[in-house]
Length: 150
Image 1 (tube, rainbow, N blue to C red):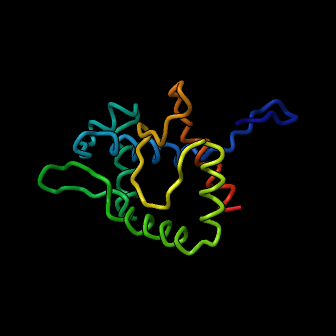
Image 2: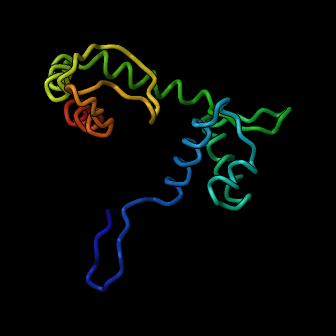
Image 3: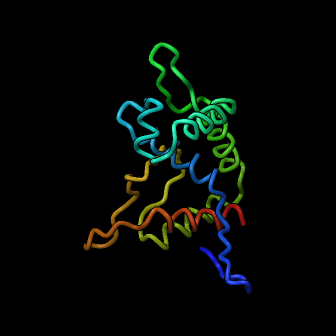
């Protein structure tokens, strides 16, 4: 994802702080009870306690992280519900849903049904052919993005 500039420096189009925040959110979501301590985050993500606290505090201000005062543990916040609701409304209001589902069904050789589901990185959507290869979730997201968001 990087390209070389004429002065031989490398341009990286990713925002490191956003990458760290996403890794933090994914880490919390991957935990069995979705609750983690500051030390869990620091140790598992390899960042300083101060950096972990800054990320947590910022995400908490935006309701993407909740802190349980009694245990000093962090979990995903209710802010995700409002974002999820907006995505569902956009999909429900889209005239392109039928054509998206047909396109998805054609490309995956699976039945595509309009519904809402919670997906995790470990989830699989369907098996392909007799080889039981899983259609990559990234490819399905690309198809969705192309057909709904342009």
